[in-house]
Image (cartoon, rainbow, N blue to C red; front, side, top):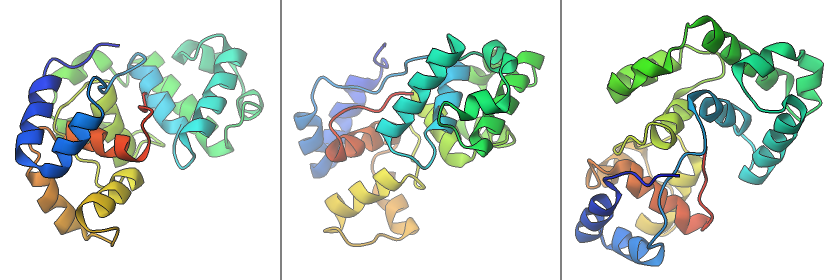
Length: 206
């Protein structure tokens, strides 16, 4: 996994601007955001991981990989829904994965052109796909495309960490979260990653 070129600059600037970030950057020095796979597997992993723990998602993914050999658009196309559900997927998620695989196979989704698209344009395209909402699209931008300035305000872990570090554990409104996050631009992905680390030192990777 390759650390994004901007990571050290981002961490340094965040530490200079924000006392909370300074502490987290010092504590988790040497760790960085990374991606494990290609565009398809990153999106597929995100779908598998929706609304379940990181540990549970990894377990389902491992069973899926064991059954399919490798999780690709082609291998998913060869298996029927009952076989996918036997790996621990809900019927809904299995359907989402089948639809995603079909779109990659027929060229409806073309990952080669995504690098050139601005964040919000790509998010708008991705959320047209069944099972991909804004959170999943934001995870894709962060983990696969390594976009530096994504702030996934719908993420429960980010919400929890921001409450803990910026409001003594009390609830934060969306406008207040946006205002806190504005200080981190253009490195909001990096700030999010450090806040996640404050809750779970083991990095999440898609």
